[in-house]
Image 1 (tube, one colour):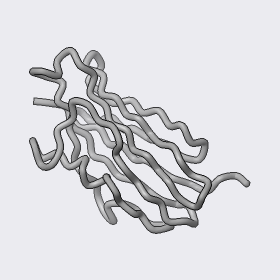
Image 2 (cartoon, helix red, strand yellow):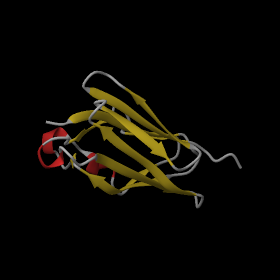
Image 3 (cartoon, one colour):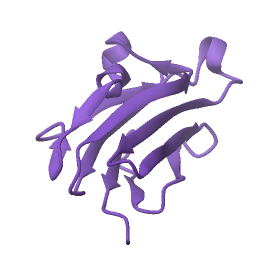
Image 4 (tube, rainbow, N blue to C red):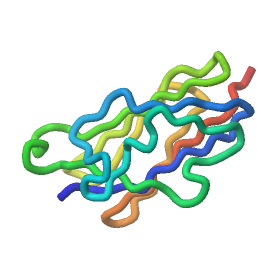
Length: 130
């Protein structure tokens, strides 16, 4: 049994973005335990739209068994417009029973709203300041 989150991406920029999941460790996927991180791999999100269009996609960290002593994390890479190439890495922290995310693009933000046993993670991609 792991710890879940509801994930969504808002593309409020004026360019289409391509999203990939190049790295993940100790995350359920491909429908295992209802987790669908795979939905975000090789995904194109048009300008000024959200994925999914409404709601969110459930993802889950394993955080038990073989993964009890191994950190659960995933990386979402964002490319678009010739000026975006970077991403967001989110970690599940067993001691806090919560997710934390780090962004390496200035105009990308990850907002996490803890909600009991399921966090909400919203990644927002904006326009660069130039």
